[in-house]
Image (cartoon, rainbow, N blue to C red; front, side):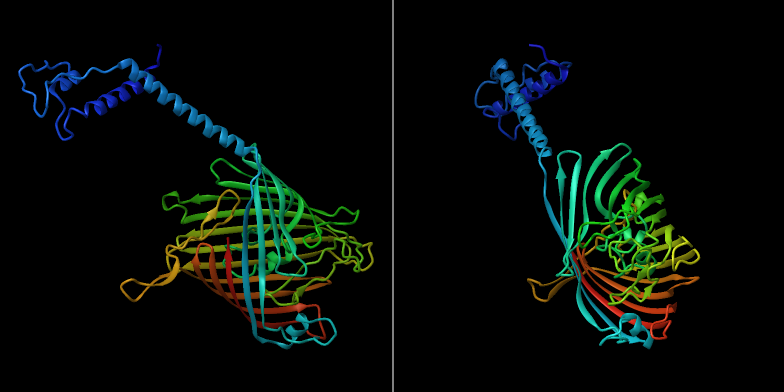
Amino acid sequence: MKCSLVQWGRKVSLLLLGCGLVGGNSLAAEEMPHPLINAAFEPSLPAPADIEPVGYAEADVLPEYNLEALLKRVESLESNWEDQEAATLKKQQDALKKTTFDLGGRIHYDYWGFPESSEGIGYFENPTPGPSYGLDPANRWAFRRIRLEFQGDIVQNMDWRLQVDFAETDEPALKDVYIRFNELPRNQSFLIGQSKRPIGLDAWNSSRFNVFLERPVVVEAFNPDARRTGLAMWGHNDETSLNWQYGIYQIENSAKDGQTFGDAGQNSLNFRVSGTPWYDYSSDGRGYLHLGFAFMASNYDGDANPGDPDQNEARFRTRMENRSTGRWMDTGRIAGAEWSEIVGLETMLSLGSLHFTSELQSNWLQRDPTIAGSGPDVHFMGYYVQAAYFLTGEHIPVNRKVGSIARIKPHENFFLVDRCDGGLGRGWGAWQVAARYSMLDATDNDIQGGVGRNTTLALNWWWNAYSRMQFNLIYSDLQDRAPVNGFTGGSALTAGVRFGADF
């Protein structure tokens, strides 16, 4: 019988183990091995012949073992092990041939109050003549997000994702809806369907992890609702120190009806690259520097009919980082707009519990002067800077594969329970304070979208890694807007609270 050295070593080990187990009938468990056995393992020493046996009931004759039978048993054990490995491998391979299904979701329930606002704000909030014309913003409780998320794998290298938001119960909205090919060359994935356009770090981040309740005005104005249907590639290098995303997307937002119409073929070309030139492995990523660059070129329908919702005009508008009914900053439809190019710069710096983020975006828009109502080319820009600090010592992690922030994990979850010996047991969760300043200039030449500035203070209480309460206090100032009933500006103080959880 031919065996490799490894197989013989395994068999000899099992043989010796078997000898020990069988010999246990005549050896006391607490006694030292028989001197003859010691001699067998130490051939340089002569076998002692004059040592009296100790602890034996009978003569010191070693039992005879059937080596052939023991080897057969070893081979049987090896065969059983190989069969078990083969069965496990087959089970794994069969699983790869089937589709999988996972359910997730998130709930964000908000309160928004407007304790102070100047007279002009009422006309930006309710600009249409009627019973509510010019009324101040109303306080409100509302679901910001009621989202169900379904995802799974399709055989070995594909997956799928479907997100639907039911916050507007009469008109659900599609979010991520795509199929994806994974494990392509250079660590890339290919997406077909609706996904986020890679412009704006704060939009690229998930609302589950963002520090503030709403995204900065510049991010919301230049990439409204973020998601569009299209084709996209995502990738990263082997060290995950560099990542990239690029693709072609439709300009029209089809989240509500899942379809686009028209033959003009308006699309945007997007590219983003980001990386972490410094990442502190010794602290498990508590320290890092993130830098990014993004570009989007969009082709609009410059001769769009204002009454046709399926036309793709250039229009930039946004709320002032709150959930007001109206969008207080609004360029309106820009006649003659044909192309726009947006360049974005982004950075994050994490120093343990202290975290800084900043973005700048610049938007150049070209117009066709031969179209009625057109005018000169225009330029808009905006930026924000923010700082956040964990009072309880946590940090904001980074997902280096896609260039976004990741889930915060409190050192201690929040809980309050009765103790067995009386009193209360408690955990405080994670506490974070933050501040942000943002600006958007959407007024140039004949376009008067307004110049808006926001200052926001935030307090976040993370109950655990999947739920939290957030509080924002926002002071907004708006000037140089197209007049509504004679008002071109105003200011407001807004307070927002969110109770959020995801699963």
